[in-house]
Image (cartoon, rainbow, N blue to C red):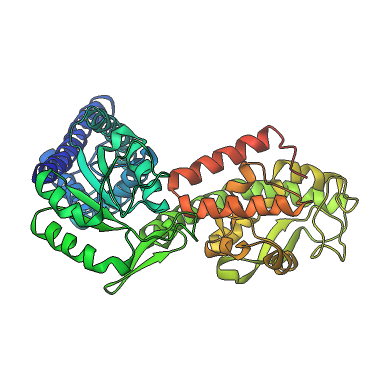
Length: 467
């Protein structure tokens, strides 16, 4: 165990050293290229001063929580997300410090280019480093040996999670239980009764022990815990909840009391919400100040010419935690009394010809960037439904209201995976709800960017479900 801890510390040190080397080499290289080919001054301070300042800022942002490559089972998207979050803090701290230190005038173009290139280099370096660690563990390096106490359904799933990917570095020796379990994977041998666990640990090198035995067997479990605590064996209790809960959960603490959350919610973290809100704010502000005025002039003129009524259509919908808000769209239908009751259909006579075009190209949704700027919506999230549909579907579909634990979006995971548009059958809405909950549980910043890309691609290829 001590060797593994040393290995993990060495990994973290190597990553930080590599990051700092990339930062300094890239900055110096870019500095000399810039000064050679441009007459514009980069900054007033000396190069060593800037390098020391930036290195210290980056080290401060990285040393606490900036490295996750040593963690087993870490995914590529998690590495990318962590790197982007790290860069966000670094840019914020370095530019704040740079401004307060009063280095005088500096080239904005140079520093923007440096931050972009450093972000790309950092992500490539860390993904390459992660691949090397996985290859090393796949060949037996930095492995951890484990045994189980109990053979419940939870333990079966745990075994597959730990062993299906050989690069995770786990070697599960076997399990202890009152009797052999014929439903347990045959590749994990039966080692004996729980009372024999301590004797086995004394004779074999084991680093981790996972226990799912019921609390009624406390007289057997407590001696094993005491032995593990006194002999450098990590003891983990695995709650046996798979007999009534069959989806991802997350662990938390209230004080010193452990709790299991029914849903893993990355956006419950302030850091993640800050990243998402910052992106939403600046992206929506940029769009509303550049492209939207031109689009508004053209669309509003056509709407007024082709159909009497207002330019915008606004409707109350349910947002975060079920809170009602006014959702804005370009009006694509004739003014009608059923707008708050009935969904648009394929050949809906209420739609105008230009409105039909706007719906197929998503142009009618663009005013919702105003909702994003105001904070009622996000660019990516579950689509907000009209109040009548929320009241109906919440009674018909299990877990329907879970999708309201996060902000609604202009586009979402459900919309780019086949659940867009009219919901003629209840199963279609059930599929949309499942997709929305999946997005809530698996959110990453890179997933948001992918959904935005897919939305634009579908719009350009004229999604058949858009009407």
